Length: 541
Ligand SMILES: [Zn+2]
Image (cartoon, rainbow, N blue to C red):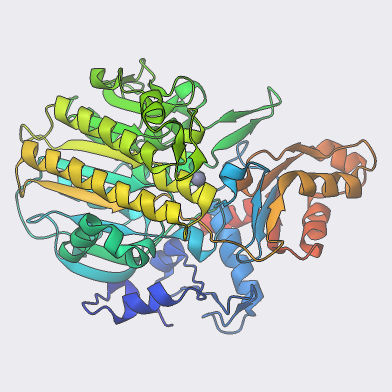
């Protein structure tokens, strides 16, 4: 498949879309930045599905070398000093890392197609054109496109490009721009499950659909994807690189946005810029299944100079309700009584034969999706969105498909039920927005933070504790350990005790080479290699 020059090619006919959708064994990875900066470098790695990369689109280089370079660049885009680890891994295609929690039997995080190929859809005449594009686009392109709709400039750190072909010619401004991030939803769900998602399918037919939207950094996970979408910057700039960080000072791991502090986000979001520019007159609502999603979309609120408090709330397993950081954000009053406990009690604690009777397990069900939808509807009803000419921003994370995907996988009956509910809740939210803003006076956008792998080959699940034990045995011997933190499978990174490793006569490259010798890895990189690659990315500017 030749994608050369596809950036400005618009297709109106579904053949290519179909080819992509049905090309399950075809693995493509694209370096959006490289393409933009050099106009020529388009890196395509194809695979026959047996895990060996072949036939890259760069002449004169072996396929393996090309794939290794593409992945290394993707890690370099996702690298932030102090927050990233020392070892960066790409499992062979289809394989992935997990811990031993059955609710996380499937784990994203890789640079493979199933984790990076995401939907991207803009909808809302007269602002949005009806178009199908196979242009290679990235999450970073969303912010400049939304900025154009607002009639403002994107944040200075945004590196994405405005997707002009999605924008219709009009001098009018929408009263509401609503961004829905469908957590863990792959692009191919829009084909495979089109009939289960009548609203999203209709919007796709009527709006601007980008069939080649990709996450361009790794690891591919929630905190990173949402910050990419909220800031238009790369993780090396905005600083959100994983969901769970290792804090070397405390020796402990911590969640992204520790204690709900958006200060970890090192770039302004579009919502920040709009909040400051309108001096808080624009209503900004951020809502979702976890703070690591919401903060990346909504940004800093009042926790940046001249920022005003914006509405932001995320689900918490602490009390199965909603939480916020009152220093930066305002919690919508209507959310306070909406508690997940009511929902799982009503369902007698089960869903499709699964136990959902606590705040964590509950998330892995379509009932959670209904709960999120109810909460969103309540907030949309209670706030005065769309009531004046200052465009309001509604920034929503819908977390259900990710949790259901983690537990049951992309082809399960559970996923079908989840996506059916997801579509229903989206339809409901859009009706409320349309009633409040008026038909033809708002824009909705749908995309994802990352994808999800399917069932791997036998032996394709790799357990983090096994890998840690293997590394320690090889490098530290009985009772010793060189691994400081390896606690979140989606990170695809390991934090090592480098001083100890050195004292044992080993190097980071030794560790990477040892892992590569195990046969389950397509590539393993050291922090030094990723840092050097990041410097080269900078040189290309
Ligand atoms: Zn996830």
